[in-house]
Structures are given as structure tokens and as C-alpha cells.
Length: 127
Image (cartoon, rainbow, N blue to C red; front, side, top):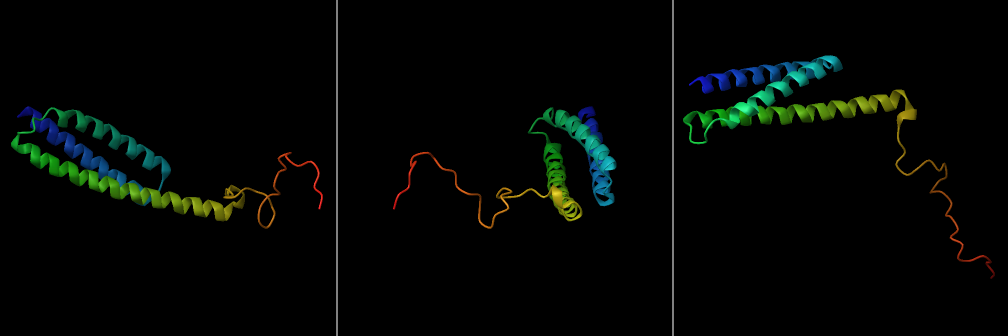
């Protein structure tokens, strides 16, 4: 029974850290986000160690599995949110500092491309 109590406490801690991470995403402060991410990572590691100790035939394993799926689904949603925020920050940075924009096709300055390089196969061109 002690294993179940430890696992319940680990789940509660992971869910609390998940809520802190969600709040820090809304706030948008990088230092707070890094700190809450580190807390969640530590809680997830502790939880993964405890989950491995539960036998699959345990009746509470299904309940813990459902909670773990909920947590994983929430994390994937927060990850997408973080990716969207990163794109917005990149676009804002590109608007404020145009020199940070990376050219897709190279910086030739020409309309279509850079001039082709001669291979050396033909030294003289006569018509």
C-alpha cells in the first residue's frame, strides 16, 4: 500500500508542476518557464521510476495509466503552444531586426540567382 501512496504523491507533484508550467506559459517570462520546466522534468523522472515498480495486473494500474495519459496529452498541447510562441517571437524579432532573417536561396543580390561557374571543360567558345 505504501507504493500506491508514494505513486499518488508523485502523480500529485507532477500534476502540480504541470499546472505551474501552464501558468508560466501564459505569463511568458523565460526564467519562470525554465524553472517550471525543470521542476516538471524532475517530477516526471521520479514518477517514471515509481510507475515501473507497479505490476501490470494491479487494479490501480489502470487508474494510474489513465492519469498518465491525461498528463501526456496535456504536455503535448503545451508543447504545441510553446512552438507557436516560439514562431511568434521569431517573427517579431525578424520584424524588429531584419538582419536576423536568414535568406532561403542565398544572398546573391541578383534577380534570379548567382552567375553560373565555369567548369573548365570549354576554354574557347566559337560560333
